[in-house]
Amino acid sequence: MGALTLSQVTKSFGKTDVIKGVDLHVAEGEFCVFVGPSGCGKSTLLRMIAGLEDVSSGSVTLDGRDITDEAPAKREIAMVFQTYALYPHLTVRDNMSLALKQAGEPKAAIDKATARAAAMLALDPYLDRRPSELSGGQRQRVAIGRAIVRTPKLFLFDEPLSNLDAALRVQTRIEIARLHRDLGATMIYVTHDQVEAMTLADKIVVLRAGIVEQVGSPMELYNNPANTFVAGFIGSPQMNFLKSAALGERGESTGIRPEHLTLSRETGTIPGTVSHVEKLGGETLVYVRAEPHGLLTVRLFGEHDYAVDEPVHMTPDASRAFHFDAAGLRLR
Amino acid sequence: MSKTRSHAGRSIAAHAILITYTLIALFPVFVIVINSFKSRRAIFAEPLMPPMPGNWDLVGYTTVLEQGDFFQYFLNSMTVTVASLFFVLLFGAMAAFALSEYRFRGNLLMGLYLALGIMIPIRLGTVAILELMVSAGLVNTLTALILVYTAQGLPLAVFILSEFMRSVSDDLKNAGRIDGLSEYRIFFTLVLPLVRPAMATVAVFTMIPIWNDLWFPLILAPSEETKTITLGSQVFIGQFVTNWNAVLAALSLAIVPVLVLYLIFSRQLIRGITAGAVK
Ligand SMILES: Nc1ncnc2c1ncn2[C@@H]1O[C@H](COP(=O)(O)OP(=O)(O)O)[C@@H](O)[C@H]1O
Ligand SMILES: [Mg+2]
Image (cartoon, rainbow over all chains, first blue to last red; front, side, top):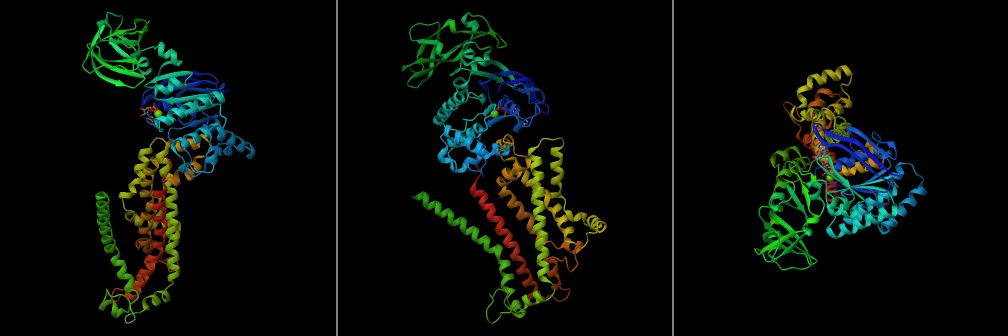
């Protein structure tokens, strides 16, 4: 239940091509995350899967059934929106049960499904309230509950956490991961935040300007990026790109993650001066200016005392270095 | 402390300005209403004197209520205004929804075409409208007036409402679509309640010119059965003699229904603003 296939899907708004031929398979029960910078077409792709946006060419198949021209309500999907999109005139209970009512389900079944979803999300005390009487986190839980009640083949999430504050975001993220385990349903989740992508996904799809740059599990993308875009997007803080020529390495640029650089006051292969230090307690981020490479980030475990303008030396872990050609493609 | 004091100071200044404006705006209305209760001589001798035992005279009201069928005129005005308002809001909102929600060829052009009426006064087409109504057999019917006023009110309604409808969250409409609501349900139950303040604004702007209009009732429906209140009051304004008591009384009476409608809409306006939509 819930295997999705996109073949050569494209979308144009007038003359602008927003999605430029996407092929993708999401297996049953998989948690798939679309990630990419703002404006790369993640939401558009998701809305095409939902049927809210026409497909310019190509096809969408769910469980072997071609749903390319099917109405949204007939696709057996549910969607959770960034802005919650709760019906302001209905109570929490009615918000959650509306889709089943529209589908003409018997009342007993609707009540049962609503009660089950409310219990899963601890929404029981709020069932008779209106959305305006709930906090942001509660509203988003109702929106998720509304999706669960329908027992869809496919869940779609469009940046569901970006309107929540940091603490609530982590909490709701965990809740979504738990829901995925409990329901075993197929989920597609859109975000521009690579931390959300890494922590939730079975499979990450990295998008740039309407093109799929790479598909893979979080660790595949981390350990084996296909190009500089994916290498720079996955991992936080961002990967450092050094000039290969200055290091005597292959290719145009050499990518080394901040956690794969060591820092020393005495010896090292790359000299530089400390430009800024960020102490986070558990880790320390040291920004080092090293010509001709520019500003490099070094991530150290624990607390370290480096002073600004202090001369230092960095040593990369050669086994974790990536080499890229002038076009940004990975050299293997 | 000083902050609260300056706040109070600003609030007093704002209120002073608003109260002054209110007094100026209400002054003519006030003069009309007080003089409608006075004798003819008292109106001219002391126009600003409030009605009191010495100058008290209800002759204006008795003339108005005896001469002609004033109750019928009221009913006509009410029917025309309410029906036109209903159609302007209904069709205006539906057109605005279509323009703001759906992408189709010629969308922008259609929007401009519908807004054209804001700049071109409908009275320029009076002759053509009259010919149209004559051939349709609608002269001296309230239907003729309702049709013309609906056409007159639509451009502004479409223009204002489509701007507001663009601001209604796409996510909300899409959630409705995924839950299987029809486009009509989405329009009536999700979008309309959220643009209620704009609807009230449009209602007020549409209502007043219709209620006050003399032109089209005079041309399209001057018969005794279809006269509106503004046309009905004209009998008291003669070329040589004007029955001021009756004119003032008729005007005072004409204020009441429009005031009631206004109160209804302005309450909607305020409720719409304070209730706030769920973001
Ligand atoms: N209805 C539309 N008309 C025209 N362009 C659109 C429309 N919707 C989205 N776009 C364009 O498509 C691109 C992708 O948008 P979107 O899918 O919302 O990006 P993301 O969700 O990745 O931030 C953007 O450049 C946006 O301007
Ligand atoms: Mg988006």
